Length: 483
Ligand SMILES: [Zn+2]
Image 1 (cartoon, protein in one colour):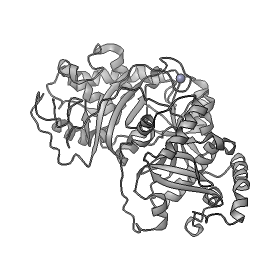
Image 2 (cartoon, helix red, strand yellow):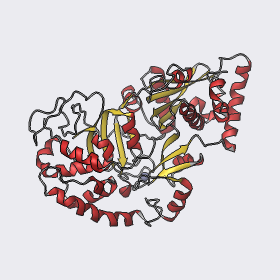
Image 3 (cartoon, rainbow, N blue to C red):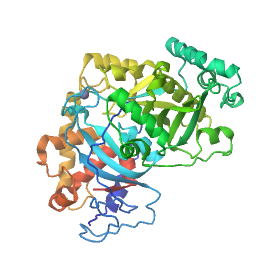
Image 4 (tube, rainbow, N blue to C red):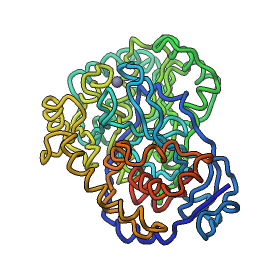
């Protein structure tokens, strides 16, 4: 219904913000997440930054706030993100506290792997087409994204014990002439990969498949949800949660695109896959994985409870670290394994810290910091903290910077248009969101919807600020943003 372009601002922002940060995060093996999140479905077209009503599919006609057009010629190529804003507080998926946490939410049907990499490097996670960023300053648990340096990881005693158990389980069939191993040892030449993936054959087969619905996958999911989470499932919910993906498959410029290894591991380029585990010909488990430029990101893992004695979840983590090592040979920038959130004090989550070297993401500076340092900081500051030793606590950082944000943004609010905005002052979205929540603008901004868009026109600058701060300047500048 309505649109506004901000080309001048975008150009300015591009020039101002070449130094914006970028790092890395992951997705969550436990995220029971968000099937109840309200989401708007949008399809507007633009190659410039535009602001369109949520139900507008062809945009740029009525109620234009400012002159400008929104060409759609490039709309199939770039990322398109719908801003849903700050959501109501909801039950925490980890400690189960009612109204324990809240998120900033976006939705996308189309996001490039490069842009999504940048977002998860700022703490974003996804559930189907929804992406969310927990408000760390105002949630019951501290959610720190965690990653493992998969290329440097060496198997520990407990990993080797598990592999011995698996080898025993599958050795007999293998000796009896089971299926040929999937892994071609000539291609691998990596002891860790060989130990983990060399089990293939003899009744075990692991295959990268498209992230698509099948009856077999759904049946396993249904059993898993019932047995492990005591939750009912529906085929539609499964499809929404674990098959739908906003990632646009990205082919790689690889010198030898026809290699067997690439065909086996990355048949459609970067993007979302289901890594399926078959045991004795039966689907036993599925790992939903986002394969991105720098990492393999674990989205969710589910298995047939019949196979729980095998510790499927732990084996899948080793398998995914081995996958990183194999993919690194095809995509050299790919070197990390993202396991989702590490939550201190939550036993279900702290196991993720056992594979080293590992880092946690500092959500104020967006730097990845070695976990040993982080754990020391966390033990001193049980609530959310930065790992930047220059400041003692999260609140100290916020107190110092909130005032700066207000001072920096206030002049922009008095300017007609957006040309006065200096994004360097609002790079860190956390600071801005906290600032907004302090009530300076009395809720005029949140929630963002088509209905109240007209009445908040004065706050559009804040929408822009919020978007830039939440997504990071680089992503915001090359993305179609929709409200
Ligand atoms: Zn919690």
